[in-house]
Length: 101
Ligand SMILES: [Zn+2]
Image (cartoon, rainbow, N blue to C red; front, side, top):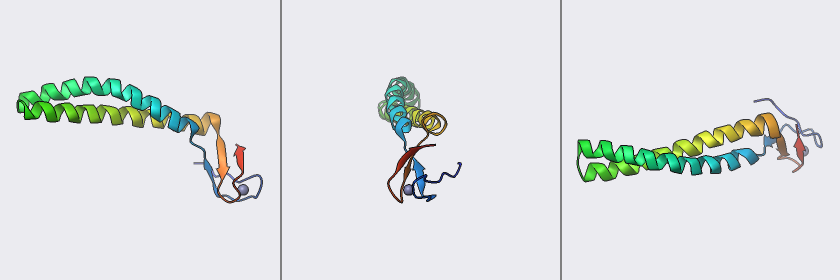
């Protein structure tokens, strides 16, 4: 990560404002839900092969949770790349100044 300096007070105590990280994380979580529905079905099918009834339930839940997190994490990582490369909005922790790179 490239070091940024606040143009107002000169402090290096600045961080990227995660606009797209949050937005894309949310979108990713939603698309993750769609994936989760499929992953849940797959997990349930696998679980029922290993152990009917209990395995079906556990497999379904595990598949759903995994699908949801994969979606949310991949969305957030795409969003973080957008924040870093495109939006480049920074916030200074020393003086509270907001600035673009
Ligand atoms: Zn500052």
